[in-house]
Image (cartoon, rainbow, N blue to C red):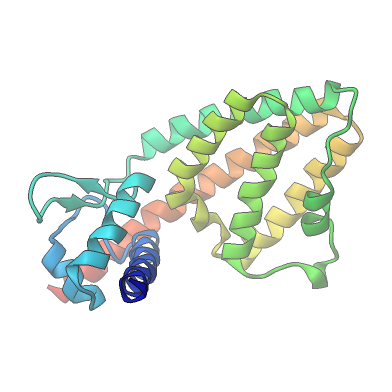
Length: 234
């Protein structure tokens, strides 16, 4: 019995490792949007057997990183539709603007201490790790919406966050964008702490709009680079 548990645990750990590797390759366009991959080719690529691979693939399917068709050759990286992501960003902006209004008009100031601990620090104490900053950015905006006190609004915002993550993380690759993220989040936090609603709304919209434009340009650039690289390998 213990041996069975041990084998299942090892398979789960291996599946999680492959899951992370494939997701990273999707993020970095090493696996191209729109392309189809067989389980056999993926098993060979990641040097893993079919059982943990299938667990990893189904995890990625649930997260929206893969589509499953019929047969073993039908795993597809969803094509990137920038108009679709633009619509999601519009929806996200409106949800967060509502959250800001509720926070500024609320009699009770929400606890933003965790956000202040990360974003209101000196330059020497700032993280330069793009993934760390990307995760902190997600937390920042999620906390704002949760502070509005509407569970359904928070659920929808969480769903949008999941959907845009595949391109959103591109905004934290360059050092200049990480610096801008710290400065913009700090200004927004200070405006919220002082209940300056109009200023906070302007800062939020500007922050997200600039990020959206940067991400669109970077996505197009990365797709072009990946396509050129693939042509050279043929």
